[in-house]
Amino acid sequence: SEMCIRDRDIVPNPIENAYFSDPVPGNYRAQVHLFKKRDDAAARQFTLQIRDGDKVFTQRGSVSAQKPNWQFNYQYEGK
Image (cartoon, rainbow, N blue to C red; front, side, top):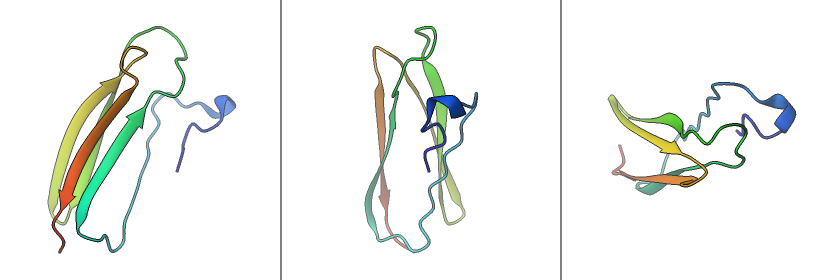
């Protein structure tokens, strides 16, 4: 879901959840894009967590006006 899809519904710490009930083994890509600069030029920090069974993988990143895109690739091996 897109938590901040409308300008009038802005929240200070948005959370996005994606869930796959039966994912197919393969390469998955998570992307973050700074859609709109809303205030100062400071970078926006975020945390990506991937749960794969009992394992949790954590990646931290940031996006800014100078670097508005970030991506992470994850290889899912299957159950």
